[in-house]
Image (cartoon, rainbow, N blue to C red):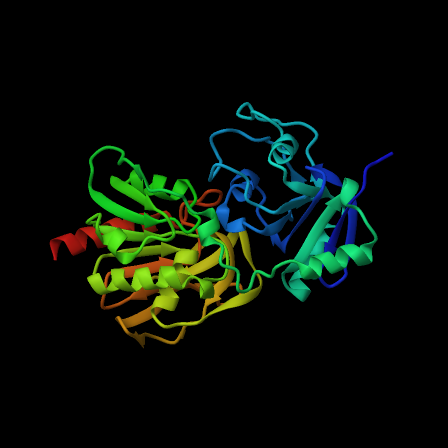
Length: 373
């Protein structure tokens, strides 16, 4: 007899399928990812902590799991939803199947025919809490629904400290040492400091709890704040640290959660998006040039900033540098009177297109210009 798994949404919608990965139960915010590829990078992205991720691509697991592409040391998603798992791993790089990797790390998942209906439902109703149940965890739906509704919400969640490195570590530059960067790990992906290392940066990765004093004690040429999970409104510790960095005049670059932290450091509010941006196909326009980039995204919160020209902040004038062409969401901020900028997307392209890789070069140019000034 075929085993059963069910997905229960906070609003009472139920989907039926079969277990995929570990058998048991899990809870999290239900979101969807539109990437056709990159499932291994998605699973190991710390920004997905406490989220159940549904993949909109119909076939998942085709290339198995290797030991080169993970973005961290573990799978971070709370649960996984796919339509049709691949029966075989068709890649010479594969070391194990995706199903085996999920099982080994205790990630509860479900394979079900309704991923399209689920995605349409989330687009209409918004991201919401959910639970996946299989095996001994199965119970009457009314009971499972009540447990889902008792699970924690993403709004107000302070999660960066749960995914950050416990102690500092260093990535050496590839080739000539050009700059020293202090990178605050709010949920950093492995490829991000790697991109800086490839450009001659010695990258000191610091825990999320790093203070301004901890950061500046390294004598960095630049400071970087990473992506990460949770509600930026709870990250007052990071906002305070960044304000000290801005006061010092040290060049700053932030991505994703780091963009939201810069916004809050400038006195701007953040808000929760209806269902967020997650995938590798988001069109973003650089307002300085009019160039459109196809970009990799994973965020459920955004910065609320004026789009019509420069605005005043405690650190001088600022502007919205990039916008999302799907919904006009703020995708980048730039200070005009101090060396600081950030974007809401992932220029490290893990996984995703390389259109935005130039931002790491811009960070180098900002550090070089500040050094000469």
